[in-house]
Amino acid sequence: MAVLPTPPVEKYARTKHGRPLKTRIRVYTRALTDILLVLLWLPAALTGVLLWQPLGVVPDSPGRGEKIMLWGLTTREWGDIHWWICVAAVAVTVLHVALDFKAFKGAVGYVISARRHEA
Image 1 (cartoon, rainbow, N blue to C red):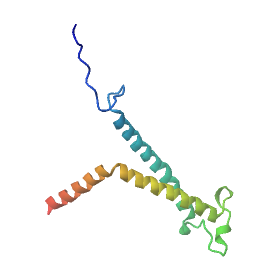
Image 2 (image 1 turned 90 degrees about the horizontal axis):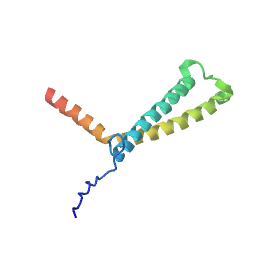
Image 3 (image 1 turned 90 degrees about the vertical axis):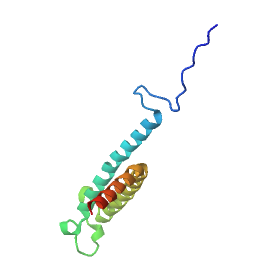
């Protein structure tokens, strides 16, 4: 009776695309953080422009937080919205840097070594 050879056991389960599951999860996580960065920093910038003093949208008079602005919200409410959007955007930015720290470190090392070779 012949013994059939057993197939090699892979460390990570492969998907139909041939990539390990761990690699696919990492790619999806990076893509999600990139999309979230755009979706958070864009409204942060737009609310910042809305609240920008030289633009003339925010009054200089006393009680400036009580002026009704866009969509019936006051300047104080827009300031709160801007603050929390920025907090979420900074948190996602920190996550993005943590996920891509190896690439970030490599890019910084490349710039430093390129400048060293120029001199």
